[in-house]
Length: 225
Image (cartoon, rainbow, N blue to C red; front, side, top):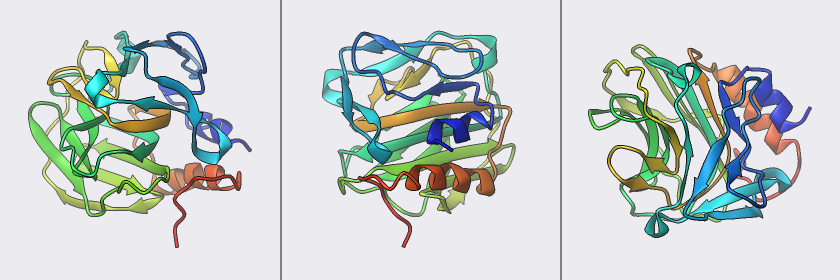
């Protein structure tokens, strides 16, 4: 089974594979799609995980994807946020990945360490292991179901310290490689960005997603040793 088929088994609310090679539309492969728009011309069609494509976002150029609000995208306090990424900044404290405005759940890297936040309000969880500038793609998933919060890196639960706060549904746009509220941008290659509203992906499903990509046998990937 392909990676995309494995993801779609879990009915993501939004799933931008980021396999686009031209134009300004970021195609959503979810059952009820909400296509996004590339802003400031990020580099499309770069080498991605598993022999697929990815998009290169540069923070200094203010490059990102914006997806207009829809009720289905307002994920509240139960959600999962998933991407494949390659990090290009070891020190950037505000390396934006995906989120949806003030008081919503937001995923970023801080000095390479994954963080799940309530945007502009509170750090909810910080990963124990940094994603370095290593030339490899890594699978990152942040999940929240009330006080249950997890950060999965390459199918390993790397959740460190947690401090719960209730994330809210917002009418702000969903953004990739940018925090829409506080001008944080990503210095990243990103592929296969997915949002699961009302769903906390289990460790078993996270592992299944990771295994589906690893099964392609293609590089560059970060393998669990």
